[in-house]
Length: 474
Image 1 (cartoon, rainbow, N blue to C red):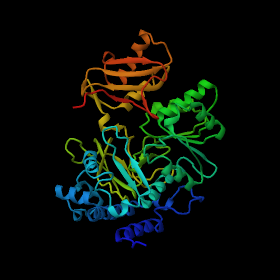
Image 2: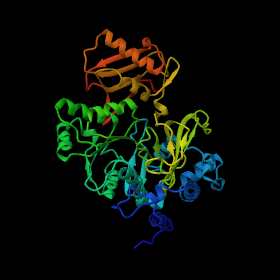
Image 3: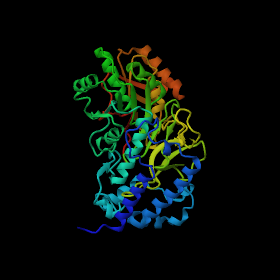
């Protein structure tokens, strides 16, 4: 038998520590209102100390065990002893996807970022979509999987009431190395004692009748998918004359505008709750707290967020919007430290306990509206798809499905494709353009709508392509 390496011994000791100290709950079925009340309601001063300890630990670990970080940080003049407090995270050089991709291409499949002694023991391989180039891969070990499932269970049990006898259907991506699919989310279901159905949103269009039958026969309580597929399933049910059974709608894959939620409740009459769930394949997550619309909680024992001006990489001033940078505090197999997620958010976080659950972990003050790369300009006005979506949902007889066509960096017109059940005449078109223009601060002549029938917008799998980039690549 091969002797266990000191790196593996340290990794397993940290994993044991996290379970012994209760950060990863091990008695799964219980009577607590919160999944993990001890950790979810920690005193702020204890959370601050914990973040400092864990940031120092993961930075030292990466320096000692990851060739990539040692080389990358040395080239930028950074050393681990520069971290005295968790707020010093801004001293760490920002890691962007192009640098990571370059390393992966030179040293496939995982590059030199992964800790070699742990690479041979990964339990799951995740990958980005590769929509902007070569996919980046992530390796998950036993510790990372365990803690991520803990984070999932916290919101599923506490917010979505996922408990024994609950039927949960996952209509996210079931393929393509997707970490929010069966390897992780379904296992979090089992922690909660729920019945899990791995439906697969990408197959809904080809197996629609079968999926709709499953919803009815199994009386699914909680459905997780994108806001657009939620809407489509609801519209299909209305058209066919049956009511969806869902009590809770988990909205993944894109920020949901408030008007979108209203439309969802209209087509899902049994739903009492719609919760926005933001996350990435790397393992980041933030979840909307019920009764606090648009405020997404971050489990601070798992990660640190900071926000920078994308033009300068300097920290954004409080209240200003910028690029979201994230540090996973417990990913030791493949550390991701000060990694750019590309999302565009406001630098404002709330730390007062929420009034319903008493959770002390910080919350985004407003929804995460979209990615920096989804920003576009019309007549000099900076826009994101979510701003347009709210207006689209106010246009009568539309399905809520739309595609924005971005044809230049500076556009004279908003070109948009919208689904409608009407035969649009000139009056309908003009009123729709006026409504869109008023909501986003343009003139109606700056808006050009291509009207299409339901089902004729562009989708990729289970995601509506709200942003269609037609700019020529250099």
